Image (tube, rainbow over all chains, first blue to last red; front, side, top):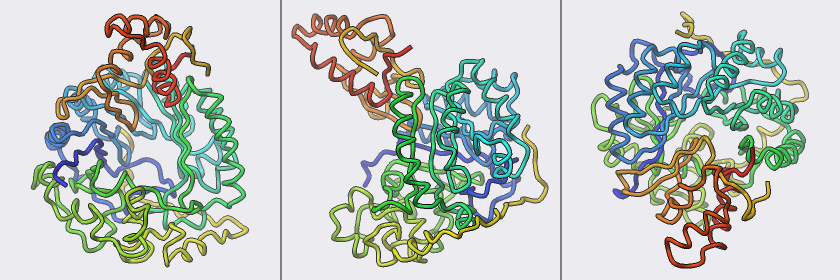
Length: 363
Length: 90
């Protein structure tokens, strides 16, 4: 396994966020601001990541613009040669700040939108946000920064897929990422309210397919179907510990977003070990490499090197066993729990919002 | 989007052709992706600036390598356009 080189680092700079999206994938228990890595610690992590082979850097959160040192971090990432994407709500993006980020060498900015319908968008975000997002997108466009719109899809907005794509095109986006909700963290709490019906999913497919062709060469459209409706699970980040590293605001290095939920993993902090040591030697990054850990039906499955048994975090979150086949797989003995979750209530339940005490505002 | 010898391809504005000093390889970087590129691929992509037609790019490379590469260049750029990494529009 020593020859595996990571390509992607997701740096979750802070969990602080002005939005309260019911599909938030961050853990239920989030660390406080005073536990966040310092500027110098993040810069060291970026340098170590590049030396280890990482090419792509995502600056995410929470809302990364809450960090006052964001420009300094971007400049450092760029000097290391990383392709840097800022993943933001757009809230708090002023013209001077956007100009400084561009000057620092930011490659690409991704702004989240919740819906094309402004009332529903703010219901989902749990706060006033549409006007600020529109202004942020216009600002980014006026500075000719490369930008993507990203929209998490679910029962409450999937019927407006066509309108959402038109909205992004109208904003002049270079790219739109349309991913159906993945049920980790807070999203699992809201699964009953978020899960689209099969009819919604089927209606969405030709709309996305036609738009992809119509906008080819103008706006790239990425459409990710909900895995609950698929035959086989997704190859979570191309397999555990193969290409992807996530570092949490307080410095935990993880192979997958939902890994903090897995109970018997021993977390390693970038404050204590180098990223290279963590990548190569830590028990957590080696826990599900290769296929020795697999159970049936994965162990003898011809797809085991295609989807790696699906997502370990999803397997744990749903079955309590991180070595189990991802229940999304129709071959899983636990697939019944997915089918049960697809019994969609006639009336959409209310969202349960995450509220963090002492709500911060973007810098 | 039609791609033919008259098209004038440009690298996608979100893509950056770079050199990965860790792997000692040319690499095309773009949102959430990295594609390792061989020398020939890099030579083609370096000419994708919206100024030259695919036919002209193929001629230039054919001269450099002393062989007819017209079909290979068209096929390569058609594939790159299908992946949204090269555009012939706008």
